Image 1 (cartoon, rainbow, N blue to C red):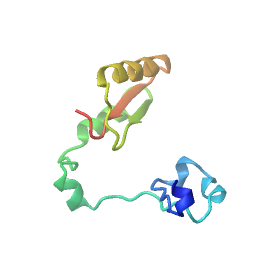
Image 2 (tube, rainbow, N blue to C red):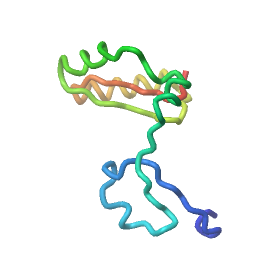
Image 3 (spheres, rainbow, N blue to C red):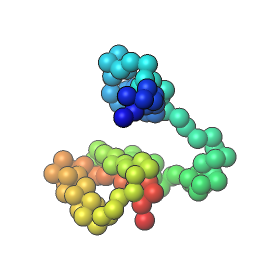
Image 4 (cartoon, rainbow, N blue to C red):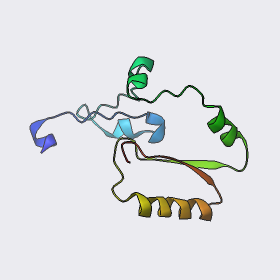
Length: 104
């Protein structure tokens, strides 16, 4: 429907995630890159922590880690999703950081 109506589909993510994809798409799917919020806007939504030392220490210590992020998509079945993420991390022998976006 979007294509039929000529509606652009803005791609808002860093092109490093999918190299070369912008060459496959035409002007209806512009890749605009990552759109960071200004610090004041991040603070207004409670995203700016005063101290990240605990997280940075955790990242620096121990074995390699992965990040599982749902961005702005809520996780409807948090318990089973976390079980799956934990299982995958264990199989990969990785620690994991989970960013659940708008989930409870």
